[in-house]
Each structure stands twice: as structure tokens, then as C-alpha cells.
Length: 158
Image (cartoon, rainbow, N blue to C red):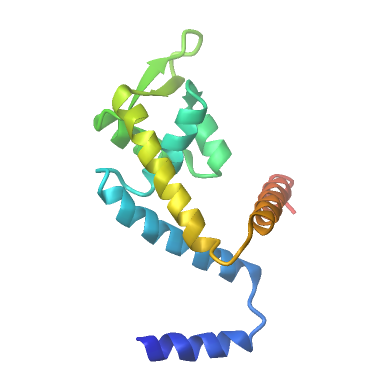
């Protein structure tokens, strides 16, 4: 396998690789990394972004989570249901719209957040190895800009 890795790296060095391939590689490896780490916490890697968002925005709705993460509402509904069944979060019916639920972490959910932050920090260290703090800051600014541009362009249906 090591021979294949070296061979592919040599070949890739000669290619004009598209941005989406780099992003795809990073995203897939992040998913593998977080899934491995999340197993120890009895959650799934896909739960982590949702838990972190709810931690930062108590009372957020499923629709708002889907919009912020640019993920299908049905997928978010399944994640919320799994997390509710496992007692990491609770849903409260909106007083003005009975079809809308506000989502907050339970004590169990709050207790897991520091461990999730450790996983995120470990990933950041792994993926940003070789970069200094200024380069990491610039990278985050660039990635934020790319995300904003992609959302705006798709929303405007280019």
C-alpha cells in the first residue's frame, strides 16, 4: 500500500488537481477521523457538527441547522431524532408554531461538548501540521470566503 501511496503522490504532483478534489479528500478524511474518535463517545461523526451548533445556539430549529450546514432537512431530522433518542438533546415546541421545535442540549449533551472540542482540535492539529498560526488564520479566512461564495452563487442559481 505504501508503494501505491508514493506512486500516486508522484503522479498527483504532475496533475493540475481541481479544488473540489482537494476539498473532497479533506472532507472524506475528516469524516473517517471523526467517526473513529466519536465511537469512543457513543456518537457518530455526523452528530458532531449538529451538537456543536446546538451548543453554540441553544434553541435553534432543525430548519436553521439545515440551512447553516447546507444539508437536507430530512437528514438533519434523522440526526436530531438519533440525538434525542440517545438523550443528548431535547426539543421544545414553539409557542407560536406547533410544527416548529427549538432544540437544546441536555446535561448529557453539554457534558460531551468538551470532548467533541478536543476531537476538533486534534483534527485541526493533524490537518494543519506544518502551518504556523498566521497561515492557519489565513486558511480559515480563505475557507470562509469560499464557503460564502459557494452559498451565494448557488442561492442565486448561477
